[in-house]
Every structure is written in structure tokens, then in C-alpha cells.
Length: 92
Image 1 (cartoon, rainbow, N blue to C red):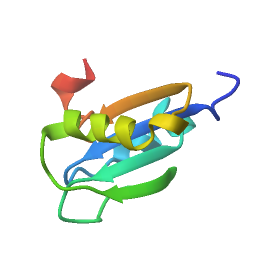
Image 2: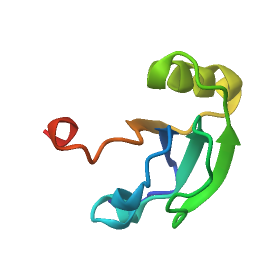
Image 3: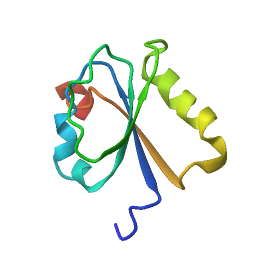
């Protein structure tokens, strides 16, 4: 991956710790976290922006919200992850 600057990673978080962002290959990117939980206690390494968002609609709501709010300035590549990506059945 030569140019990571035009890749945006969006994380929809509800109280997960987000420690997985420190693992390879996730640690190669910068993140925008949409925090739908009631705490700020999570890994913030490589997080460039935190957006507080009401906890409605699961992660799909978050992803659509990001697209609508940033429609005119989206990166060429946008990757969406739930904060719970490290749960074993989601890793597969």
C-alpha cells in the first residue's frame, strides 16, 4: 500500500475498547470514530476525529450518516468497521 492518505477508516463504536486498531494491518491507518456509547474509554491511537452520535440504527446508521454528511469530500476509498470487529465470529 503505497498511498494511505486517500483511505478513510470509519469505526462505529458502542462501548468497545478498540484495541484491535493497534494490530497489523489495522495500525497502518488513521481512523474516524463515531462514538455511540456512553463512555470515552477506548483506544485512541491513530484516531484523528471522534464524533459523538446518538445510538440509533446500529452501525448501518453510522455509515450512512458519514456518507451523507461528507458526500462532497469523501476519500477515494472509505472502509467501514463496527467497533466490535474483534469479536471472534466477526473476524471470520
